[in-house]
Image 1 (tube, rainbow, N blue to C red):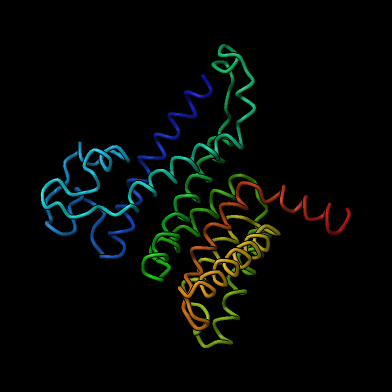
Image 2: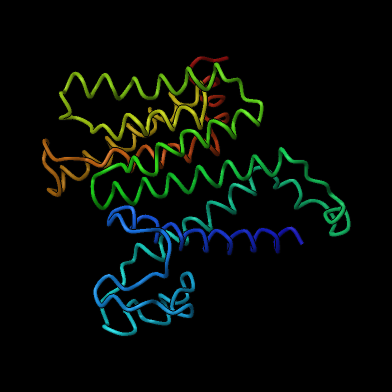
Length: 271
């Protein structure tokens, strides 16, 4: 029974991933979010049976049914990422339910905080997927996606009884960290969008998890950046989409921030 619920959440995540693909493209082209999706090349409306997450990509052999334009691998990968991360979030919070009998599971009661917690995670994951893909493709962080999300995440976290002073301090730290770099480099090191993304990370993760996320992002980014330079794919002065690493780090810390801090304290500070 539990695994059936987990599978349904995975399918729901696939559906949200399909919507995120649409959102990413329409944010970039400044199109309305209303209306059916269309092929970017031939402009033909996409039928519902050609818009089934992952399966349509497979059945159509990664090509538009009408004009045969190739469909980017971004679409199934984003859908799968959303499905997996949504299911993983539910598992992390409610994995203990797997040990219950089907009857006990049916009678298990969720309170409103449980629903709000998982909703917060799914929303935060969705926005970070948007940030990842948008910055990966166009080296930009969309303010249209990030700024409203700051308010939404803050409100949800306040309803979850997270201390407003902690969230405000964390948001300031996240934004200030990138603001200082922006000022010192006069915008050469990072873009203004990273400042707003730092604010979102702080409001979403809280203190001290924002520091952990920033450290992980720069750690992953430095490893990948150095590797790309060594194999000749990048130069020392090449631009790196920082939002890609910040979004990945944010999701990691959302899931395992406490465990990472406890591991660090145990192995390095011997606490």
